[in-house]
Image (cartoon, rainbow, N blue to C red):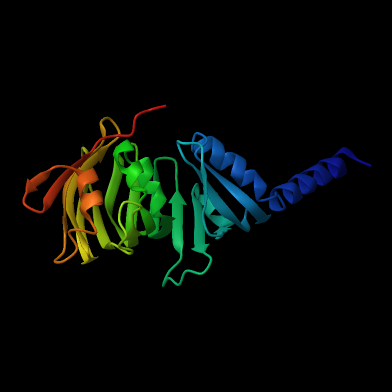
Length: 253
């Protein structure tokens, strides 16, 4: 067999390996890229077209497994120097799939839709952990850019069917966050959509200083007694019936 034939066989074999590479490889890549915070479980099919359950590693050592996420990587986009991925969640009805377009100098996220358990709020601050906040948080954005200069764009998050171990009322309400990028980081605004616990606040998140947030909490009419313990935990009363709270970055372990 000639050298040319051997070379052709080797190239063909390499191409087949790349095309059929198992999806589990992506888990190792994601685990490395996220510094051990995110991996994939129950991987299926290949790196180009597959599905898996994203698994989030909490600082406490716990694991949070999300719904199955399906992906489709466009091979032809690689010829232009870009990585283009379409993403869809199981059991989530959205008008357009999420799209990630990555190049050397930026990552663009289009039609972002990420359902998350509210237990992740524990990761924001030690202060929130005793409240054991629960519910579902839906993160959305039409367009976000991640560059060397930081995050650019706006996004929202809806905290739905919120609850806490410190209150017998469940759900406490529904809440809306707005995230707006600035040259210094991301500004955060919190408002109440509906519910017995009325929350409002503003804050800022940056890579250099972490999270800082100040807000107010109060009970709607007739709910003061059922919310007394939770409001007491959140902070002192600024005025009759209105408690104030502040969040600082989570301590490193």
